[in-house]
Image 1 (tube, helix red, strand yellow):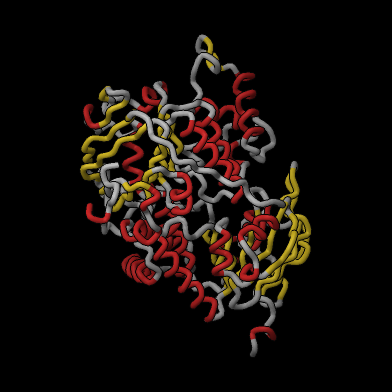
Image 2 (tube, helix red, strand yellow; image 1 turned 60 degrees about the horizontal axis):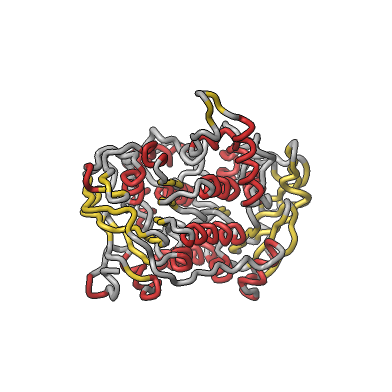
Length: 512
């Protein structure tokens, strides 16, 4: 039977979902054919996540029809979705921290499984897709990127007819992205349909057959992304082209923060040990660190931010003073800002309001007086961030958990930027953020740099690192490459370094 004669693998007709203060989906129509790679594109808060939750049975629509292979269905829960053949990888993961990788994956599979057999299947599937996993590791020891790998492998083990992927390439090197694309194309050729959510317009244009664009909960257009440009897709998504981020070369200032031979053993059996980490951070400079998730980024940030108290006193130097022994609160009070990669749970307390979450970073005479919290000041500060960073939220009293991932990230970045830190440690600042918001965040980081802040940017978005960094380094297996002036770097070179393959001979600016 010709593919065109087959019924749609998935069809939504007039699907509507309304919450007390917002219409998340407004009469949405969507058609996904067998073997089609179909992109869903929209800015943060456009309704994409709600629509995917409806398809996967997490949320029930208020009205509308869902058809699966031509038959109308009511998907009561994720188990029913998986029984139909729908697999999904969420942007916010659904994993139990205290269970192992294999135990988490077993919960998402029907039937009973011998754990030893399942661990072997996990290793085989992970190797097939180039996604390294250790089935015996506990989830609480994994980085965000490694958690995403668990979700991807769990979905693929279910042999889905429809696979929903939300920002799947953020954990991969450029070479591995191409390998994943090849695998997805093979899956599609075998008849598996793929719903692909990404803010990387170049990926959508390179991979997807069809693109449905959403804005404000409604479908605003359907196009063939292969016939579009990044600019035209951006206009469809946000109504305009994203602002241009301008990076002007300028001489860096004095060294304000130094790491002098940081070596740390594993904090737990599955951690990455750090080996002889050395670099300087200069005022008025963005130092970018690339690397595949799980290669020591978490451990490095914990040491720099003061969360890992094993660091020897003399290894970290701030303003010519040894500070390796100081606490996280001391560093924050003295001008070190920190944006962790985990938004909910570390970057923000889910059940507290945005105003209350200000206290995570703004504990000073303006917010506290004689031991009492100045709530009007917190509300004012939160409102200012919401306005400045165009955060889609129902005011300062909105719970952090009520925001979309991208809008929460904008809020957390804004909370740190408004402190005017002297040193800013930031991890994955634009993960899951739409192109307009990503451009705004990058512009704010450049503005901080131009104001004299020393910024350490850890990111798996190589385009981002090349756009805003003055110098680049790569972390692999707990080791750090020499520094390279960004103008002397290339995607191919950095991609090879991300596998741990570097030498001083390749570094024209190794001593920069």
